[in-house]
Image 1: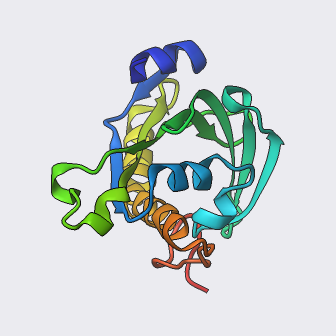
Image 2: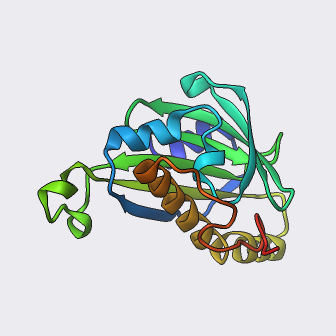
Length: 192
């Protein structure tokens, strides 16, 4: 299903979809190991360096819902839309009772730039997160643009990079990430 179809079906009218922001990383672990890391209930406390708590409301494939409590105090809810065993999932994210983004988590084969160079590397995979931020039409254009620039375009790439790196780290080592392991984030986990 396309991004547009998912937004239309699960979010509704009244939103402008921003250009996607994508982060990916080569993982020196099998796709099965990455899937185990991202599909377990409460997984974000092990893979997400800005997540203080990850409370699960429901954990049942595409019917799953959980809550992300960041070190900064921000609280988001994830509502899962599609669950593709061994491949990834799609969800909408935002403060409870609001939806601010469509998010796709995907595990894939290594790409040309990350293709295995030795037999030992052959079990690796690629892991990516794609975010399509949603801007409400009922917000004045100047405020939407300010929000888009200061809450999405500038801060989101480093945020996503930390999450995909944290997922890779946990899948490779079995060791949970630590707070701000790849650096702090001004919105979700500022420096102490």
